Image 1 (cartoon, rainbow, N blue to C red):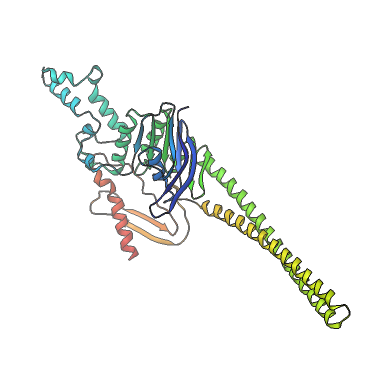
Image 2: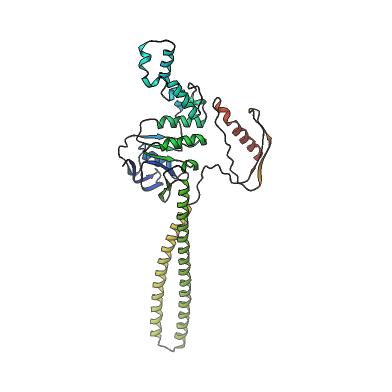
Length: 397
């Protein structure tokens, strides 16, 4: 079976802090998402699975013909920013050859650069630019593209390279809805192991399974995001039930111990009165007292051990509940309600030719500023964002 296997992976920093311990799981063919809170070690784990870094202990096995893994990192190479789109895609020489030939050049060097399938390259690239919603001019430098456009062209190039598996670290960052749809469709066509770190709900709803990394280890959930939420809710309900059972058992133990202590005190008081009255021999009373003390000490020690065990189990359960706290997910649904925090009235900006906006933002709301990326002049696609952020800063002051 074609798969990537993690075998007892552990990662420890130089200061002795553990990032994760004894992780064992398999990434089979299909799209597997890796989720987890910030700082849980997702990127470190992805790097280890790609064999770009080493674990403190454990191993990674590529099985079933997996010899090369394509890796997408969040940060692009600065050197690539000076490349043109054509150069980045490895098409610059072929385009130059086609241009020279169209101008009448007959030198063999131009014909050697192209194959029979390259005669329609210019049209194919034009179609690709339209599909990816990139500038029509393939001589455009990557530094002039928006963050989303750079991300999509990096993904396109990587996913069209010869690899047996892919590991993508937050590829949905900067992508708009249409680009995410393209990424989902592209990954679905590949019957190989694919691991994607993402917190985008749209993307997660199109995965085959979800792995969640936490301080408790790694947990596999089948299906997409909705299946993940349902299974997680079931786990939370089960853990909550266990916590209540343990708390109830602890309460019963405490009450029994208190009753036992009260009974022991009463018996001791009664014994002291009998001893003082002289109704029974002193040696007999001393023996009873000593026996009662030994028995009470044994019962108390046993009760303390049982309480310690209950407390430990309860702490473990509470630790699980702590890990089940909600993560941050990217969603288009705003949380509404609360007081008006920001009110835009006939808002406009000198750099932007657009209608003014009238909008309120309530406390607790998450605002999604949505729009297609600019194709011809990418820097202006963020003008509204910058203008509104500046306005928010001014208002907050």
